[in-house]
Length: 296
Image (cartoon, rainbow, N blue to C red):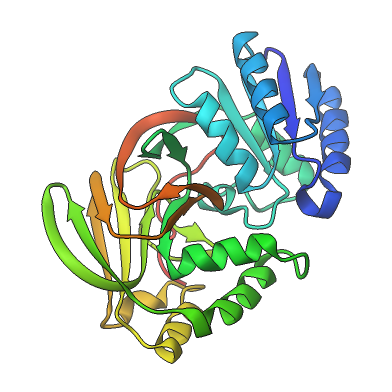
């Protein structure tokens, strides 16, 4: 194997990502794999390091962090021959979870990061690529609030943010176009998903598969605050899709007109209106095991 770059978000895992990266570097040494450790100081430095690695012809880049770091990585690596390895140390880790890269001890995760690559799809929204899902409405407000919280960390931050945002929630009017067919909806949430999970392990689209060439769309309709809370409590297992006001669609091209912020992979990607399209087999991910997890 050629040289490997380890790209680290030093803030991930409550600051533990650097320690994890140093251990991964040691493990790679035991596996006779040469690597360099990249620890950018800020987001702009992350992009510079990614561009530098790509231009140097690096064969494999291992991201040690969460979905935010993955988001930056896929926006540089999409369409290239470089393989992305993932060692999840973030708050949500939803992309790693969807590709079965979240379980196991560090040695096992390191081995997966060196494994042969599978090709996966991404969401293209305007000029951005998104790996997990694009969220609009109530979950976008929750995600933004969760990112602003200093405590607690992990999935608990999404639970607290949900409770904080719930009193402010009101459904919005949208025009949704799926592969050319338009209809108007009143919805508390619209999620366009490439993979099953969002919000730190919640199965918003249980049947979403990042290698099937389609995007899943979850529409949570005009529900009251208490009903919305009950639905979100069921998202952990995917049982929310049984609610009469929850609809799931599949499409390759989607357009959403309305107002509000749009977030993807936990990052701000713009404002509505916006178009979304699946970019098939555009990213190489080491050790990925695609396929929808289903409910449960």
